[in-house]
Image (cartoon, rainbow, N blue to C red; front, side, top):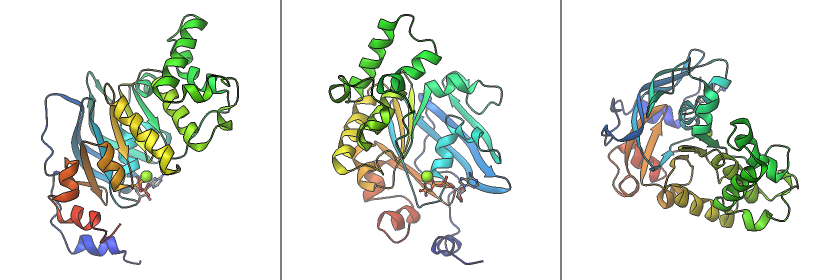
Amino acid sequence: MSTTMNDTFLDDNANIPEQAVGAPFSDDAKIAIRDVSVAYADKKAVHEVDLDIGRNEVIAMIGPSGCGKSTFLRCLNRMNDTIDVCRVTGSIKMDDIEINDGKLDVVPLRARVGMVFQKPNPFPKSIYDNVAYGPRIHGLANRRSELDDIVETSLRRAGLWNEVKDRLDQPGTSLSGGQQQRLCIARTIAVSPEVILMDEPCSALDPIATAKIEELISELSNNITIVIVTHSMQQAARVSSRTAYFHMGRLIEVNPTQQVFTNPDHQLTEAYITGRFG
Ligand SMILES: Nc1ncnc2c1ncn2[C@@H]1O[C@H](COP(=O)(O)OP(=O)(O)OP(=O)(O)O)[C@@H](O)[C@H]1O
Ligand SMILES: [Mg+2]
């Protein structure tokens, strides 16, 4: 078996902290994550993560490819359930509920904890129906006029209304990549989520479309908690108040973003942000 640079690096540094430095447990967490591990069949991909995510916080997750960011993110709205061999253990409390309870109904959970993916994935439906889909299945509107209001408000909040208001009946897929991603965000916010998970939401977008999404993240964080995975350290620095660094399935460090990028606690974080690996 070949040895990767990361394996070598880790073998030379056995001093991985058991619990991330700088992760105080607060009474006011929106999501309290304790001892969460994830395995794909017998291969462990996330190891014993403890983390509190604050109410209306924007927290960024960074780390080398394959370190478990997406796997960890998917724990927060049970998207790993869709992968047969995947097993999640530990506790993920959000306000009144235990997210990692097998008996929990994931349909209302995924309205409360929405998700935006790397590649914009509008449904093969009209722009209107993309946004109306969630409110319809969750029964959030009694009349067409109420549904119209939700669609307009969501598209406005996503910064897309002016670009699409005259073409709501056209397919979502007829929009540009950046517009499609804002449509996916509008679709997510249409069901009034408390948390939005974003997995590299700008990696397929140009700098202008990226700037629009980042602006949107700041606005949404007035009343929505946002967990964003990004490969762009500049993006993490622009949008997040705290940054969590993952390495080979472990949460190594979580600290105020500025500190992570200027004066990290852990040498693995420093090696990553200075480009020595990853
Ligand atoms: N569906 C799956 N089945 C089996 N193993 C998986 C699956 N998805 C991910 N893994 C493994 O879990 C580990 C973590 O993968 P994950 O996709 O969470 O990493 P990541 O940090 O999001 O990487 P990237 O930055 O490339 O997106 C990797 O070793 C990966 O091969
Ligand atoms: Mg990923």
